[in-house]
Length: 320
Image 1: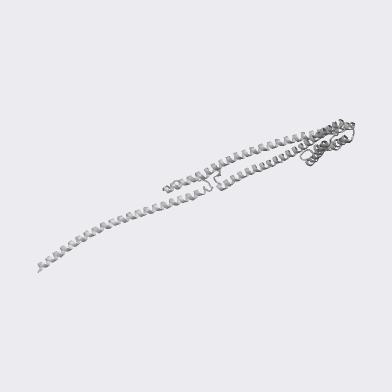
Image 2: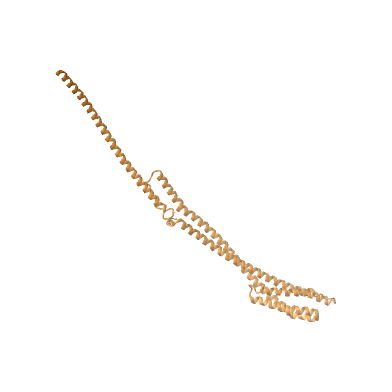
């Protein structure tokens, strides 16, 4: 972390936050894109499944038609009155399913495969089952059997083959879509896990950076202030860098140097005052000694004057 000591804390933290935002923006963008593709794959699956369902329902209506028609023909051969209502209903449902399939087509399926299904189904409906029902109602038994064998059955086989081809292609597309969805899901999961781990690493490195660049230097500055408060101005403060905290070091050094100069000036002034006070004290003592000497001399002079006065008075008395 020492190589970051010359960069401001704000710049470093903004860089870290920027990297963090870029990281999660990338992860989020890819995840959204992957989710959109997964949603598209799900739509594709639903459409294909719907087409396959319609084909299955149409095929079911065809077999219902054949079953009901055969039952009606058996009733007719037994001399009864055949009921073609159920066969007609199945034929109508088959035609409705064909129209629904046309609306759903081609979708994501190969147009050639879809066209083959629709063409064969329409041909079966127009040339196979519809005339088959009319012949059963109006024709002879031999005509009905001939149409069933020579027209309806081959057309049914062709339609069934095209439906099988459609279902195989749809199964392959569904499998491919599922594989793609699983791959994207796995990638998104791994990407999120990697982003979380990288985020934790960035958080740890950020903590170490703050400890190395801000917490420890502030502790050193606090210790320096404590030493200054105790009167110790001799301890220098090492350079921390040109970051926010490091910019305080030159100011603290200047303050410490200014305090050292002030203390030195005060000490020098105190010494001068002490020397001056000592000289004044010595002068006072000398003056006191001289004053005492002068007082003693004045005492002697006064005594001499008294003695002189007494002698003069005595001489004056003798002169009388």
